[in-house]
Length: 162
Image (tube, rainbow, N blue to C red):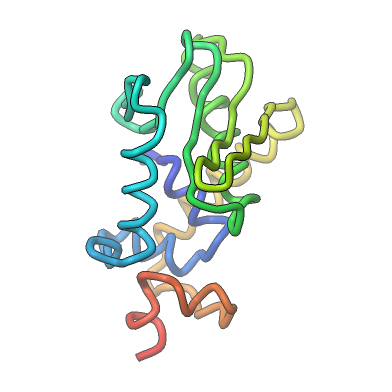
C-alpha cells in the first residue's frame, strides 16, 4: 500500500476522513476551503518548480536544491498534521537515499514559515503511524465521527453528519 502525505495529514486530523480517502470517497473537489488552499498554492512561489512527485507516492509542493522540502498551507489551523506530513516527506526521501536537510512549512497568506526536522524518534513514530494507517484502511467500516469544531469546515461534513 502506498501511503501519501495526504494520508499522514488526515491521520492526525480525522481517521474517518482517512478511511474515506483510502476507499476513494473524495468529497474535496469543489469544496470552498480546499479550492482556497489550491489557489494560495498556485499563486505563491511562482519561480519554483512545483508539485514534485516522488516514486509515484508523495507529491511535494516544491524542493530547493534537493535539500529543503517545502509544503505550502493556507493557515496554521492544522499545524501538527502539516508538520507530520513534512516529516513523512523527509522520512520517505531519506529511505530512498535522498539526503534532504529539513522541511519548511510555508504560510504565504500570513507570511510565516516554520522549519521542520526529522529526528530518530520521529522516524520510529512514523513507522508506527504507517502501520496504523494500513490498519485503518483495511477496516470494513469507517471509524466513528470525531464531533470536533473542525468538522463544520470539512469537505466530508455532509457524509459524516447528514
